[in-house]
Image 1 (cartoon, rainbow, N blue to C red):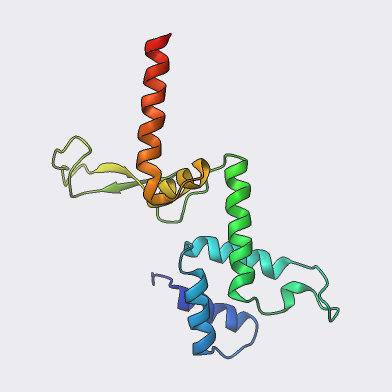
Image 2: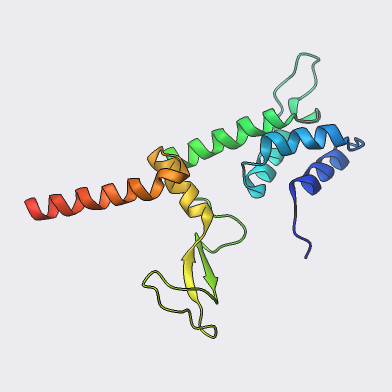
Length: 158
């Protein structure tokens, strides 16, 4: 199975709208949408295509080719909705936020048995938690450590 890229998603969108791919527009898609996961962009594209809101020219919005900003707005809105509803939506590469790895070390520092493997959290889970707690991904570990310390303080006080 060929791994999908943002460029292939752009080309597929062009094909569905009977447009000739434009390298400049592809660059614009990559510039604006590269911070999002491909599955999120794909869902946003499907949602855009299903949009029947009437545009200024009388045509349904979904019939016009989306700009990368149009798709970014949908992705961000969907993330907020999922976070507000406390729903985790896993990516296509994991199982409910978990991936099995067969090399490396465990959290305890032990070597992973290559025959058995180990479970590790997928990046999509960490992105969800960062969004849920309202912190950048780079600050998530500190936020989780603070929550753990606060929880332990409450236990000791009780």
